[in-house]
Image 1 (cartoon, one colour):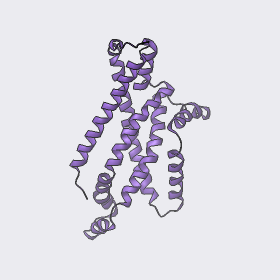
Image 2 (spheres, rainbow, N blue to C red):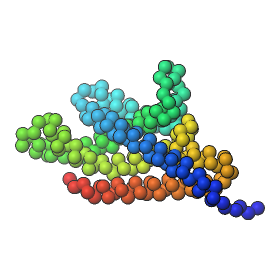
Image 3 (cartoon, rainbow, N blue to C red):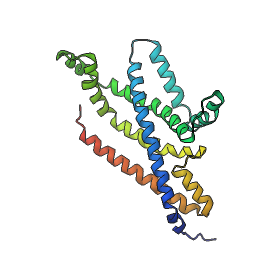
Image 4 (cartoon, rainbow, N blue to C red):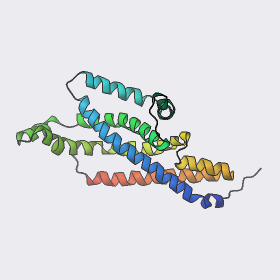
Length: 219
């Protein structure tokens, strides 16, 4: 039995796929933005001399990084309302993805901090910079440059992970593709186009990030 390709019905619904793609990118952007701020704070807190803080942060990172993101999404969406914390579908997924991103970015920034030579900090002190000035003018630029490749990889990974949002009916690309598949019965065409959109988008993001990396000076 031969299969006849018919992409016409997919093109008729292409705007839905693009809308889902845009939503997925938005979810990933918001999550990595919040996760980057939280991860940066946790990375600095992890370097604290207060013993309990590094231990708590390490426990959080270990638990989250070893828990499938789908499990986190289902806990946030279905379990938290039982304790009085009720969020919408999109808010629940952003919260879940942010928790996930924060754990990974904490490690990214921790490694970035560890890569900064102590001589750079000593040089800042030698020219009279205060602690906050050293953090903003010396440590942060070097940390950002050293962490940029890992940040880019994390963003691409988070964008692909937005496909999991279909499990709670968030209308991103995978959810829309599944709906079109059910409505048109064009299984191969639907998922070929959805795959192409993911591949092209991730490739463009990677190319843009590589170009951005070249604009930053190396330390």
